[in-house]
Length: 344
Image (cartoon, rainbow, N blue to C red):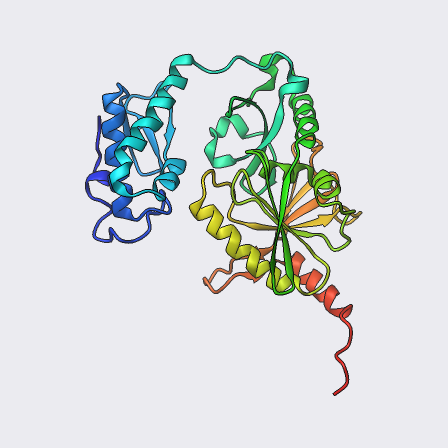
């Protein structure tokens, strides 16, 4: 067991501040969590250390060495008293060790039926595994996966089981469309947001947004687009843009997204996105990020109905978020369609 200076120092003299990696714990709580995790894994025979990146890493790395993420564990423990932490941590790592001893699942025997496309943070995967894959939105890539008894396995080299990337993606998207959603509505003043849940692939259903609108929300393509966020793997938030109420809707969506991404398990993205219906001026085979347009590495079957843009942009002088150029243009268009005020 190795406890490095990061753990011993408890992040300096600001132990009551939020930990930058293990949210929503404070720095003191995060330091205690790491110490408990290192003690427990040592008792279970795992030689790991912690270097400050929300994961336990092998003391002597090998190609087959596991990296044990702590983000979900931190979020789970935040809901319990600290006196319960040792037992919860031991149960967590005992289950992980059982999975490691069983080894990785076998490749899918029927990929056409088994693969499901999944959104994954690019930074969570080795660079060389995803270097040639385009972003769906900045920072998120789409990969084929399978699920068996709540264990999700991602496959980053489909040729290993005889498929090209495009074929594996086609199978994954087809099966993703077959999932069903649970829909609730969040209403505040005159604002309405759709809160979609159901499975650990719910956020990934953004990849097939047209299906979600048609089958779960019973909507045709909204002419002015949507505000969309996927703060965690099992949540998809949608606001249908109709008029200038999109401005307060954006504020509510930013608040809910940030809260969920910070406190809930399986965080995915803290951003709110603008999804615009595909038009000749918004080609479906490109990804737009502000003023920069990046061609996809190969024809992308995902973005056939919508183009995705940031809803806000951060300014260089750290002033509050601003509307992205695309959303600002849309608000100007909608302003011209507002009815005139009633006469005094």
